[in-house]
Image (cartoon, rainbow over all chains, first blue to last red; front, side, top):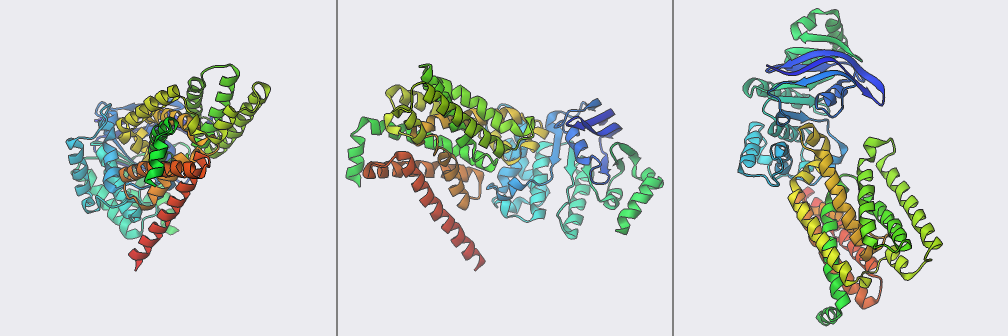
Length: 236
Length: 276
């Protein structure tokens, strides 16, 4: 089943076109990595897919299985959160808000969901800790748990491993693989680490002001663009 | 001490000040927790200046002051919270612009019409003792409404404070809740102006939550402690103001500063102990 479908999609910031002629689909069960150099428009695309930025041209359709309550998002960390007094439980629970509608308070179902997702990511012991006192890797897991509370289908990640050390990065990718395989989550991840991307994802979208490549990872590695990009990143 | 308090409660105007002040302090502290964390600490100051201009104009046209000041402040609050999206002017610069523009408009209106009278002075420096009975009723009703709406939207306010982008991305109407926060803030600031004056109103919003953040680890705890501290500091400030015959607003701010210093010390002390 198709979750996201883009036809001739373009995005602009203050009248300047950042991305154009995007044609790709995200189907259920995909693990899509969006790669490209800095300034290629990766984060812009993610904002567009989340409907935080209206398309400048073309269409972006959401599949029938994708109501607003079924999109999870792991943003890049903001500075404001570094001194925020909130417990891990409070942060994760705020992911359930899109299920609440006009109802003012969380109920037992939300509590259950929060505990379930925290257990899934092994952060249940951190429940009452203060978010600002956690390590970078732990904070990332907490925000991921929050995203899981918001979705059962599609998970969008914006440079999820920035600032993590190699060990934590490896653990994080393992975790994503588990979510993809065991929880049947469709994953769209923005990454500048193309070598990791081709190892993990089954589909690649390569951006550079527009769409340079979209297709399966195997096909990407056959193209000159793919080979060049993987090798040149590997060299530095 | 007890004698002083009993004596104070003998004056009806002090009882009125006590009721309104307690409620306004509580509202400002709860909303302040969100505003400080959203990096909008100066919004109180900006709105108070707009409120001052609106009051000056209301006096000039002999209209009821609050009925003009509240809607004008709501509009201003909304613009301040959204300025990042609608223009390239940064939030802090926009607040500064608004402050001086509004003050200029207010001062010009005053000097062209009534002149600097006591009423205007009261709004500049605060005089909680000049509240009339109808002012008190309106303030109490509005404060209770703010408290009710705050608790009704508490979880939404938490979500847009912690991460508005995430909330909007996952289908929560973040803009709507931003607007609600703006409306509640505007009402609280206009009511608080009477007590603290245009120039000191920020303290009601900023001090209690900053103080509570020194020691609290949860958002709920921070909001709760901020509310409690705000009320206690207001009471203490009111007593000092009565004993020393000093303006109430200034007394409350000085109490707030002292409490903040104590909590900063507590935080340092706790960190030391954790390290040892």
